[in-house]
Length: 221
Image (cartoon, rainbow, N blue to C red):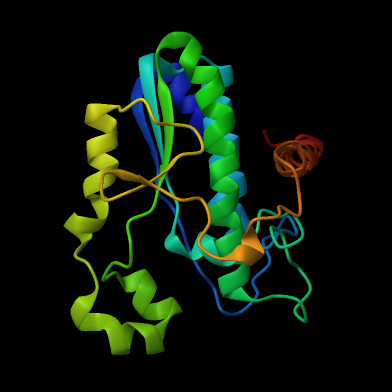
């Protein structure tokens, strides 16, 4: 909320918004507001920022939103039950991370429908497995075994930069990887969604409203 205020006061508009943040914790962490920490980082904060920019008309004339997902999304169906897991017995870092990243497909489709009216686009893409500190910390065994064949950060970022400049017509829910559209599903068990698009958005909107109400009651905005 404070960031949105500063951006609005600054008066400049954003032509390209890159929703790049992503973390995977193997141990459950809870924020001061009572949410699972990676849910806030990977999804809820991204939703708040992007929706806020749209509501305040802070995006440029023909804006582009690029949502950085992950190949991990192929392991889970679309759902809400794994978005904000606060029970240690149910928490699994890989599953909740994958669920956050699949939910980005929903948000990209939602934002594409809104941006089309002004000639803009929203894309969702994944970078492949990249040699990053995040992968090393979150998936140490995988990193050790695959280190020599993991992609460079430049290779991982290539498609995001390409989408921002080339702005192809396939947008919204279309998943991009290496400058090409890929399938939304790889395994049969993810074909049947466990939550609709509307249910995913309603889940985020409920938590965002709850957070803003709590902050307002405590004298913060």
